[in-house]
Length: 161
Image (cartoon, rainbow, N blue to C red; front, side, top):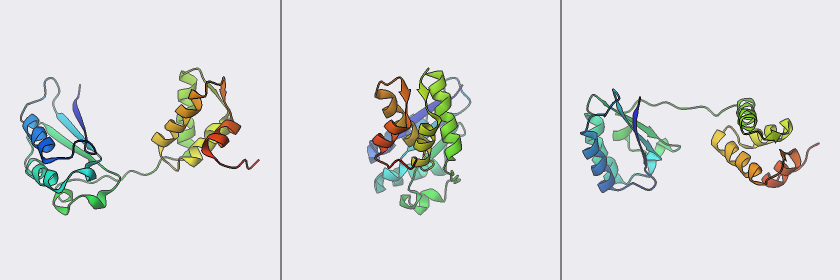
């Protein structure tokens, strides 16, 4: 059992938002051992919000874990970065993306041409969420099957066959 709080820093990026977070950190998790705060798009916090977060990052309660997620670590102040352990994630391989989409299609009872899924995977450039977004768009066409030519049209690419 996990006690997880997700915060979208793109929308909640003010000093007041971080003060509210600091207040909630005081409360222990209800059932879990840890209370995990995931701050997504953390690079979008204002300078004042970063300053307000600093003290809490320096001395968090023993039951609190912070996960700061960003695609732009260079926008995070050095004072924040120095208090974090950094994990850089690699892009997902096209093969793994295609396999994941095939799994989803199978579970959703949707037929898909293998080369259609491969084309989506290659165009996603290692970004699984982007590939799934394209897959979702293909599914919304309402066709019985996700076909290669439909993916070409959706992506605006050229048929290389």
